[in-house]
Length: 236
Image (cartoon, rainbow, N blue to C red; front, top):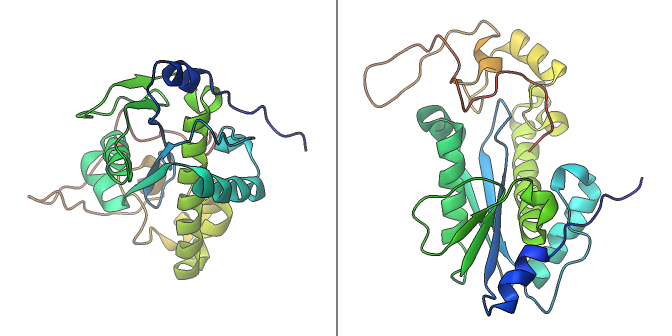
C-alpha cells in the first residue's frame, strides 16, 4: 500500500520564522459515529524535531497511526487530549461538544501555545491567535499529528467499549453507522454509550428520553445541523 503524502510544515514554518515557536495543531476524532465520545488532541511539535510521515489520520492504516502516535508523544513539545462523552454530546449537540473537547485539549497542554491551527473549526475564548484552515489535517503537519493522536486515543476507547458491549462490534467500526452496526441496533436497541440524539440510533425504532436537566422530552427529529443524517462518510 502506497503511503499517503505527508502533511507539510508550511504554516508552522511561516510562524517559526517570525519567532512564534509554540504552534499547536488541533483536531478531533469522532464527530460522525453513533456511539462513544468525541476526542480532540492538541500537539505542539519541536521545530528542531520534525516528525516525518504525519498525514491525515483517515488516510493511514491503524498500524501506521499507532507507530506515529508513539513517535509524536516521544518528540513533541507538548500533547493535550480532551474527551467529551456521549451524554454531553446529546445535551449540547456534536458541534458544541467538539469545541469543548478542543478547549480541553488546549488546556491539557503542558505549555501555552502562541498560535493554534485547526481543521476549520473556530474555538472560542482562546488566549492566543488561531488559524482555521480548510483540510488542515492534510495541509498542516501539526494538525495531522493532532488528528493521529485523537484518532488513536478514540479507537482505543472504542476497543474497550467492545469488551463491555461485544454484540455491537465496536472493535470493527468504532461506532460509525455501518450496516452491521445498524443491524445490531435493530436487534438489541441502543446500549448506554449510544448517542440518542443521532438519527441512526433513533431510526432503529427505539423509544427513549433525553435528560436535559428539566422536563423530559422525547426527540422526534435529528439535530438539524450538527448530527449526521447519513451513516456513510469517512471516519473522523
